Length: 81
Image 1 (tube, rainbow, N blue to C red):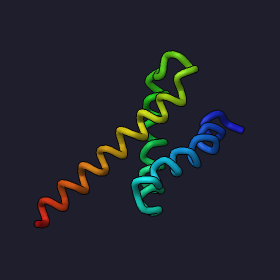
Image 2 (cartoon, one colour):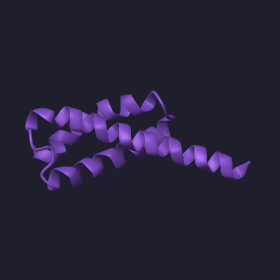
Image 3 (tube, one colour):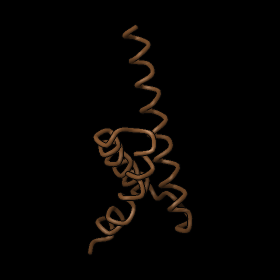
Image 4 (cartoon, helix red, strand yellow):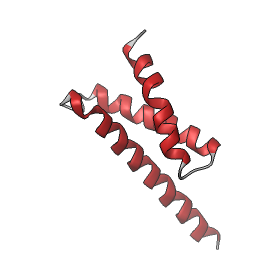
């Protein structure tokens, strides 16, 4: 199995579970794909430098994207009121 395909199959369920604690299923699925895309970009840039920090990197990117999604939805709610 290709490395990226293995990585996605390993981390996708964990990312989705983490996001499902804050978002509905459809949005969690969309954000999961966004996290994976952001991780691929990070990996292509040589991050993380220490392979033992991959799980920490995944968690950090997931948290960043979740915070951004929450911020965007809060801004949309304020704009509509």
